[in-house]
Picture 1 (cartoon, helix red, strand yellow):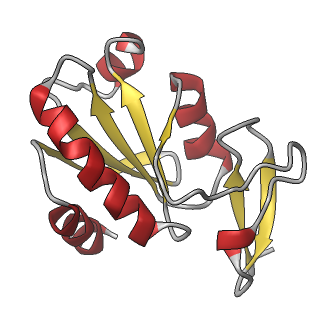
Picture 2 (cartoon, rainbow, N blue to C red):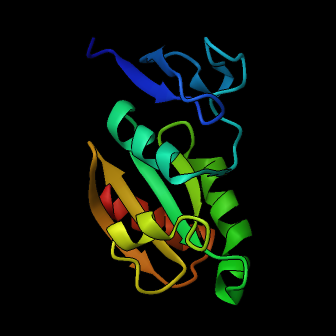
Length: 144
């Protein structure tokens, strides 16, 4: 159906249909009952990034980071602010490159923080380096 989004729950992986024009901010997962959007990025495993890319219809923004990375830690609150504004029109995820090295290698990540914009199962844009929330939102608007 063209008048709906398929939103993948970051908690259980279930695919939920959210009608266009409905209040997606308040939507809950039909399987686990958790909110589909929480106004903050979800820290996820590689399998969840794949599931979001292949089963969901929302653009996916992935912050590839590591806990030892100073610029990554500086950008974390800015990425969260961007998620507060960008959801529910996009899905915001964080991927720890130390814990998920295979996926970081698959995406060709050479430096962190790196943000990826994924749509329809493909990477459509990427940017490296720490950014403010306004810079992140501007980059997303430019590449949407």
